[in-house]
Every structure is written in structure tokens, then in C-alpha cells.
Image (tube, rainbow, N blue to C red; front, side, top):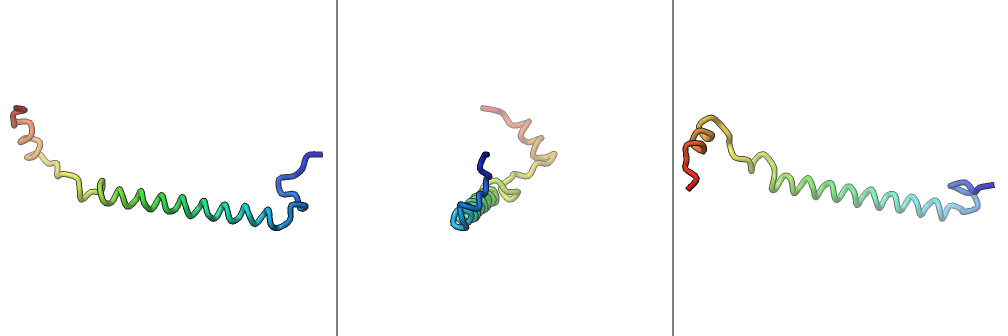
Length: 66
């Protein structure tokens, strides 16, 4: 007979270790997502994008590449 994943013989200590590990991993993933959002806001957000309108495109096309 194959042992089950959560064998009662393991006791609460083994199950508690999985809960602590899961909580730790969730905090690490949340921190990484928070840092990615901060990097986006600081470097790639809408405030850092140039305005693109007909005049800007026309000026860019008319300017020489020299």
C-alpha cells in the first residue's frame, strides 16, 4: 500500500513545515511582484513616454538623419 501525501504518522510538525514554507514563498512572490511594479512605475510608466502627435511625427520625418 502506497503512503498518502499527508500521512497522519508524520504528525503536525511536518504539516506545519509545509504551511511555513508556503507562507514564505507567497511573501517572496508578493515582494517580487511589488518590486516589478515599482520598477515599471519608475522607468516604464506613462510619465516616461514621449508625446506622439501629428506634429511630432511630421517633425521627426522631416528631420535629416545626418
